[in-house]
Length: 113
Image (cartoon, rainbow, N blue to C red; front, side, top):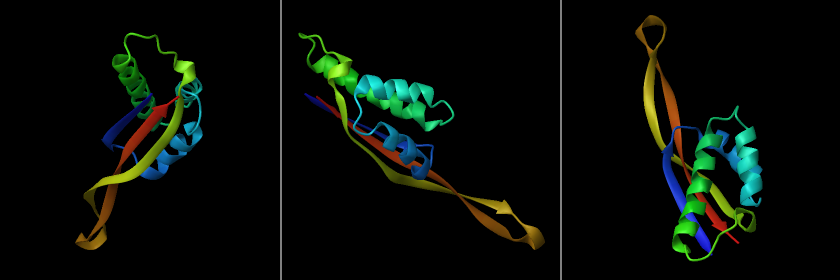
């Protein structure tokens, strides 16, 4: 059994999201969710936990006739890719402006047993 879930345009930079994704890559789902609950200082951990829970819900809905145990499944793949970039400007000295890049990312998770 396998489930793939993708979330797009998460308002976090890919570099920061990859730090959290690397921490849970290859772990069992129960252990990964506990780790994500403990990493409260990273805002993107909430989004990644939501994706993992969604993947498990997909597996449970596909196989509703059997009971699905969370501890049997592993995060097979988790990928963080760059998304759209919002471009903003900030006023600087002498009437000039400097650019600000507000980056986003796409996160995809594959859960399998």
